[in-house]
Amino acid sequence: MNFLAQIQKGIDLIEDRLDTEIDAAEIARDAGISQWHFQRMFKALTNETLKTYIRSRRLANALDKLASTNARIIDIALASGFESQESFTRAFNKAFGVTPASYRRHHQAFPFLRKVRFDSEYLRHINHNISLQPEIFDRPEMKLIGLRTQYFGVDSEKNNLAQKLPGLWDKFLARLDEVQEQVGNLCYGIIRQTPANSDELEYFAVTEVPDFQHVPAGMTQMTLPATRYARFTHHGEVDNLDRTVNYIYSSWLAGTGLRHTWAADIEYYGPEFQANSPASLMHYAIPVTPETR
Image 1: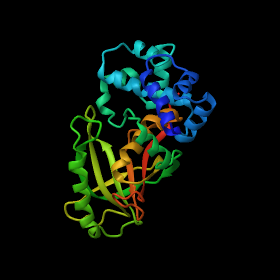
Image 2 (image 1 turned 30 degrees about the vertical axis):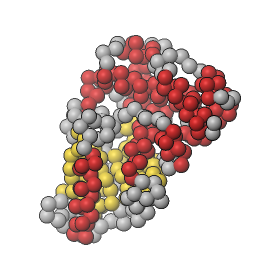
Image 3 (image 1 turned 90 degrees about the vertical axis):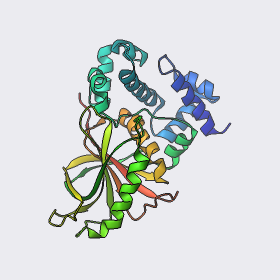
Image 4 (image 1 turned 135 degrees about the horizontal axis):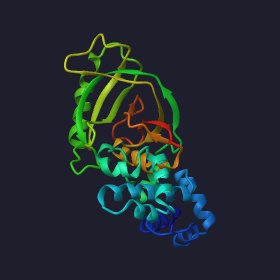
């Protein structure tokens, strides 16, 4: 058995035991390697400790339970490995910027939170195709011009992403030269949620401009305020971007000292982007702020 398969076997055990106690020694035994070697390989692959990963997976599992079951919050807290509802609420709020009770009432207003889908292909992806440590930077205000659509993402039962976004980009790129005084050699995909209590998103295919003096007919303009962002590098086909986003939201975000601000996410497309090439390179950024205390 190769080492990726061994790590996957340990991850499968974690997934099966999210609601029960489990320790590193048991996981390593099931994977067929020593605890030290398992933890070292796991950290090298995912850039996080096994303990942090299990905690983040239990928080992500709690998201699903809060949204899809009537289980009491205290029972979800205990099943997630917390000693009390209070300690669970503190950890949940620090990770996601919202209390468990509020998330249960309004979970459709938080369409970006998602449960990671871990399999061997995903494990290979995060090991080879993602910058596991993002660049944290303060992005100044941006003025953007382009085209807009609304869609349902991959985590919605109404998922129509494949029907909406490629056509939007085709239309925008065909008219890109109409946008005067473009700033830099980049295009951006802007993703943000539509009205509260909906899992519908809006997407803008845009480029940056210094001002709005020349907006082509039929295009829209938008201003993104200055915000701190965590920007990750995605290598490979754009069809696998969802695996990168899954890592960011379900693993990295829950294990760091930052949380999403619920402002817009940004996709960066530059000269190194090649739509369906394994040699492609692009960036995905989320707006972050220090976790609440």
